[in-house]
Image (cartoon, rainbow, N blue to C red):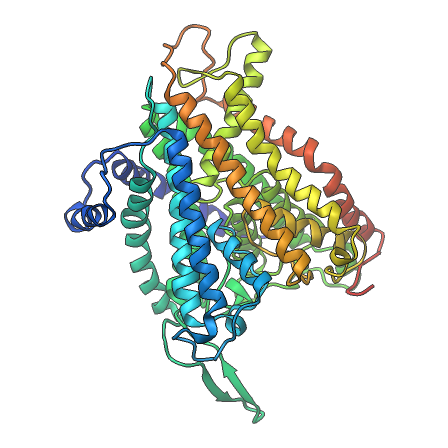
Length: 571
């Protein structure tokens, strides 16, 4: 650990915080239907889309209709993407003559991209055509991100409205999220990435001759446009198998920094949207404060662990920290920061191999996902995931003082608490249930490359990443099999929809309630006491649920490493 590393971390935090208010203000105007700077240009386009779809933008939906629209939208998206992948060999823009994607892999990939997970059991440059990457994956990167934002905005309306039977129109919300938020940022962002050296071409792969005289084929393609939305929309994945560690996906230190900022930008700003729409910006800052505490703690532990190295490395005189699996152009600080950001924000893009992190350094990214990726989280998903924990925290506070729980003037009753717990508990069911299954079945045990606790962590990380809709891979796991493709896809679906549906049910229930005026006994939810309570509830629930699995994996590996025992590949 050094001063340069902490300066990088501090600068990153300052830039993200500086974006919260302006971006939050802009998005609030977008989703409340107010005029923005882009309205003269995009307004006619928006109205044209509604006319083409036969949609009345003024007609809002009950939460059941809103939920039905979300599910239908994703089903159609899955069908289109699956067809593109299966028919890839006969479709245009395929300069490398990639064949049709296998049925189980196409199922896994289609599920992955409609759920904003972007888990990749394939190498993009050796498996997919340009058309599949653009019309299939990049297209879904926009739409899955937009649906996450739409659901978050619907939940905000639930808190902001009183005695209302509707929570907005999904079709309007998803259109505005795409048209006014994602596209206007991605266009200049793509141009910036091209300027930094990222390819953006429909030309064929390049052939080169190395200094030794060997022939090499260099994969190219429309990379920059996909990277822009995969980062901004916290989709993750990558055009290339090496992801953001590949020089064509992350050419410079500046591109690395801007990509990290873009991962957090919308998720952090949505807390400000929440505060503005409920009429008290302090509420949004309190939620962002809880997220910030958890984020900084994770960065500190990961940076310390990687900078300190391990007992085994130090025993060989390698005392400069753990550089295994990291790009020398980024170093330990930027690699540790990226790892925490991408797993806190449901992004899943990586600029270093998490499999090569120290045991404790790899524990934090795993824990970030197990908590439901509520530390900023995926665009939209982070906010509504955190608000689920807010409901539980308010319920706990009500039990302690013997008072009916209230939040923003809404009584938190049995229905809301039950829906919140359903949204919380479905994640460990997928993460731990499938991990247990994979560690006893031959098809599951054939996947990990390592023995002992490290191999267990490889399996646990995969199912945690899938259910949390993160998509990053720990590495060392051969997941492109029928067993893993199928079970990981199920985890992705449950992790996305079994959280969204309870969230929309909560939104509908709260919107229908009357607002209760604050009184002397009302628990303030914008101060340090509430932030501390919220962080405590998150850590207690996460600790009780996941500590046994973490103890079997990274904790045991750390203790064994301190005693000089390693778990080499195949050993």
